[in-house]
Image (cartoon, rainbow over all chains, first blue to last red; front, top):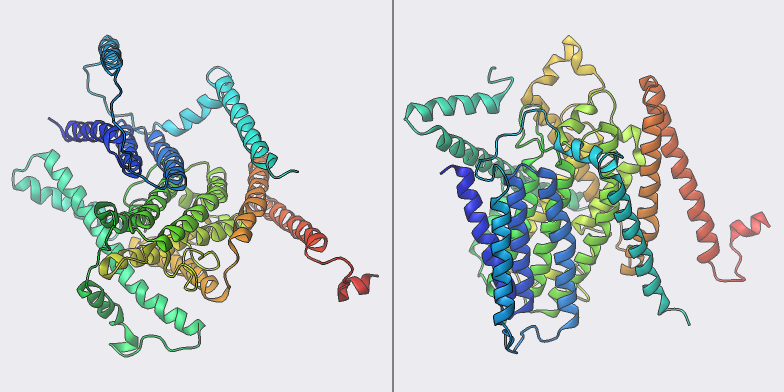
Length: 171
Length: 406
């Protein structure tokens, strides 16, 4: 087993274990912190795959923005952070079966991809993945349309947020 | 490859030879070398940190017209060692009702979020941890971990002052992150890369501080806010929330926050040197002359880098000890209504002009960039003046300047 595989397995256990803890711990703030651990593990996975940009953006966006927002919302809205109700619903069997079915389908789908058993080769030296990603995002042959649509959507969300925030102040 | 040209790789090659001589597998040798390298880098950063305690105390003393530490050792140089011994042997208190695990992780995470920045700091052309092609985003990511550490400390202390301090600090850091990210795009545009080493090398002829002085100013302001230093130090307020998010921490756990803050300030001084003053190089082509060839020796470059970083650190201290704090609503308004639009304007200007002037000779390019920054600066001052006339005077009261105009 190579060092890379050991790191991958450890990270995988960390990601899945902390994801399970997110939904099972009773303290809401601990759940948010376990979510941070899980998201950080995903960033490590990206780093193993030499996707530097994705790894760093994962931390900036998910830990730096979304997780902090979660924690703020939890701390500001709940006085009692411990949830005392039952953690399972009565109809848990069918969703569990459905979940297992989806997992099995995903595993089958991934295993059918050609070359799934091969280990990833090293990237050729001098290949600037960030530059490639950047040109792909703005070139008309690649992703310029989804990119622009996403930015328009974000702008609309921004304007909407400002409108909702100021609407209450006007008399 | 000799020791003087490339010390790190020289030692690494020598160690590899020794370790493979002991019949260790090559994969293990690589792992051992990485661990040694990381340890040496952290030890260097933390040793520097001990020196920073002395520097900070001496400089604040000078600003406040005192002498500062001067009893232990020459010029009080051994004072930080005494400070550390005191901190380590102090009683370690965990308050009742604190969330023990989160409470104990927070100081470690706070210091870690600073130390990880040293992985990408190029101390010299051949001495650096790693040359990431997303170096600038890495700075932002490390800042995100620091924010998390503060919120963890504030919440787990089970103290309302700690929580209030953490809220203030985090709202501060999250909002000032935005102008900082926008400004980090300007060295990216000017150097055509996000790699810290690439940015340093792109400034061998001309500092980005000259090409974009406004970007340097905005970076300085948002760095000070990110550090939570005066005038943005609302996380600490003796009369309302005492020490803020680290109020419950004692002994070395407080020491980690303190050490992290000092090292963070110095590291931002270092980033200012790298992004705007050419880092270890940037001698305007002087190092290419044979007379100044000694400027290319890595150990001289380390000294140059540390001197430039110290200068940035000194400016941050200068601001901290001379400017009084501002109110929290003013602070947030200053960010959202002033810094963000201004940094966006500078970004648009830099992006367009750097393409328009790309084919021009060097001096025209530099003059154009500097001039456009100057114009933006003057327009900003005029807008602020007009805004000030409109909003900051009660109606019917005439000031001398208005009376003169009238």
